[in-house]
Image (cartoon, rainbow, N blue to C red; front, side, top):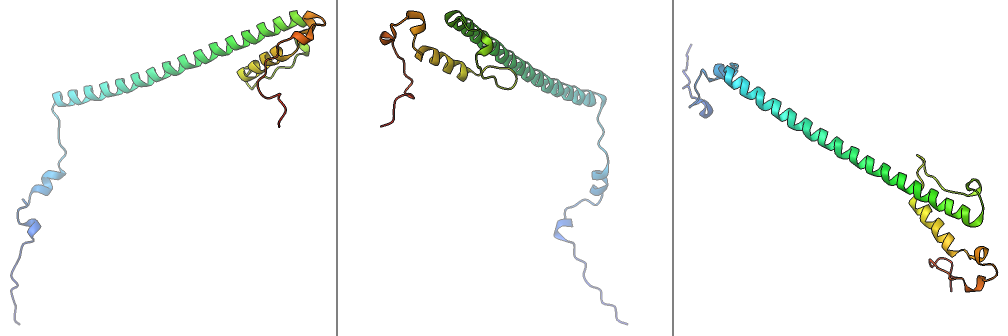
Length: 147
């Protein structure tokens, strides 16, 4: 029986490695009380800053909603004023007038504008009698015949 002794060779990655390093890496690192308090304080400040940003965003959204609601109320009041003016001019009530309302009960601004254009465009012969020929006509370009 011959036993050949093969030369032992160290891997290049193990040549400078300390054998006990694996044990040191597995240990749980401990903090002092001061380090723990500092870490907790930094974490608490970060959470408070994030909560402040969320609160600021919610306040901005609430302000935007309030502005939208205020504009909607002003639009509804303007339409009611226009209807009251129409009722006084032509003697009709608001019950037989047609108005377009989108979901949520808001009157569309586009419809309010088109209603005002219709009022401007219709002849004022009701108010002036037979003097319909001298009525100024404001056109939006849609009522002209196509060539």
